[in-house]
Amino acid sequence: MRKPVIAGNWKLYKTKNEALALIEELAPLVKGVDNVEIVVAPVFTVLPSLIGAVSGTGINLAGQDVFWEDEGAFTGEISPRMLMDAGASYVIIGHSERRQYFGETDATVNKKVKSALKGALVPIMCIGETLESREAGETFKVLEGQLRGGLEGLTATQFAPVIIAYEPVWAIGTGKTASDEQAQEAHAFIRGVLADLYGKQVADKTRVLYGGSVKPENIKGLMGCADIDGALVGGASLKGASFASIVRYGE
Ligand code: PEP
Image 1: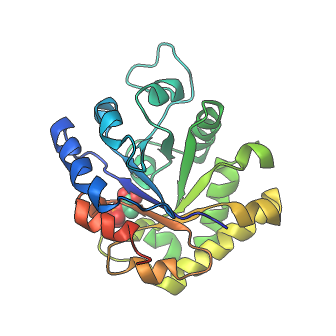
Image 2 (image 1 turned 30 degrees about the vertical axis):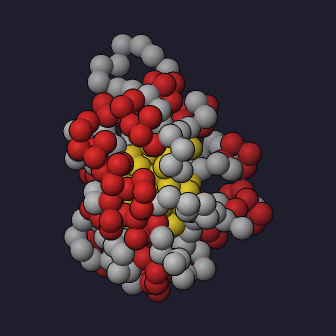
C-alpha cells in the first residue's frame, strides 16, 4: 500500500556531461520498473539538462535543498518555483550535511517543507541522530524533536505528500549501516510519532525511507523490514549499476 521510493542523493558530484552519462547508464537498467518510485537529486545547475534524458524513463528529478521565499533579495538561494521550473518534482530538505555544515535547524527545515508543499514539490524531509546522541540513549528524543519541529503547523492534509528519510548521521558515508533491527526500531518509532501528530491512517500511508551506506548488498534486508519504505542513497547512487540494483532490490 506504500509505494517504495528509492532516491539517489548525488551531493556535490557530477557536472552536466557526467550527470547525463550517469542517466544514460541508469535509464536502460531501470527500464520497466513500475513498482518503485525512482528519484535522483543532482546539483541544481544540471537539472534542466536532464529533463530530456529522464523523460519516459520513470526517473524523477529532485533538488537537494530549497529556500522558503518565492523570490527576492536572497543571494545564492533557489525557490520552489525555480526548482520546478528547472525540472524537479521532489526536494531533499534538512539533510544532515546541511544541518552540520550550513546551519540548518528544525525551524528552517519547517519553513522549507512548507514552501516546498506550497510550490507542489514533494519534500523528502531528513532526520537522524548523531553517534553521540545514540550513545547517550537519546535517539528517540532527537527523532521526535526533529519530526515535531520540522512539521510544526502542518495539518494532516498538508503533511500527506511528505516523505520522511531516517538517516542516522553515524551511518552516512561511513560504510556503517544501521542493522535491520536498529533501522526498523527507529522507523516504527517515527511512524508512531506521525500517528500521534496526524492519526494512524495518515501515518500508515507515509513513506519512511532509510538512508546511511545503503548498497546493493544490504538493501534487501532493509526493505524486508515492516516500516522501511525505501532508501535515500548517497555514494551508491553515483554508479548506474549499483543504483539500479538497489532500485531492483525485489528481483
Ligand atoms: C545520503 O547522502 O543521504 C547518504 C545516505 O549517503 P551514503 O549512502 O553515502 O551513506
